[in-house]
Image (cartoon, rainbow over the protein chains, first blue to last red):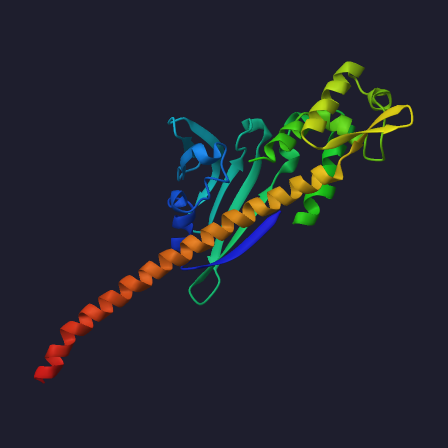
Length: 142
Length: 125
């Protein structure tokens, strides 16, 4: 599933806003594990850094881990908000010049096959269900 | 993040195999369990989890109790994931615009200030 958006400003500014500045714009109340009880979210800017939210009680909920940190062009992270890390997909965000002081942001959410990675070592039929979900559920969304 | 329940449900390989059995149409628990290396009660357990995640639904055909893929649940999962990133990126674009707006305003203020400094000098000339 890929999403693109053109935003105002340069590539560097867009990358910084998306990562360091994520607390300023991420729609926490609706797009978080704790919803209205979530008070902050942040990305630690390095490979292995955490992408997490903090709730009212100060507890941290990890959404994923940074797997690529290439400012200002690219950031990638595993994605498993509210789920165990072994059910993670991958999210990659690329930033490029789109002319006239605009930046193109391309977000790819992929790796559905990694859900239940153990499946690959079991019988082939175990993976077909997921192919079905991929085909029926996500291919059309891409 | 409400789609999480469907993703968690499908993260289990056995449950995915159970789900796979329903691709060609509604099946009874016995039909689903046939050929799977798990017991019928275990299959029923997985079906309950899939039903709770709205990925399958229960149908009664005559005297038979059948399970079937729930297309509405699948569509909802897809739509949710789709709109999730749409919403996130829309917020991001808005924040980028605000940030640029502030940067523009700062630049303008700077220009106005330097312009004000220039004017008297021009007047003296």
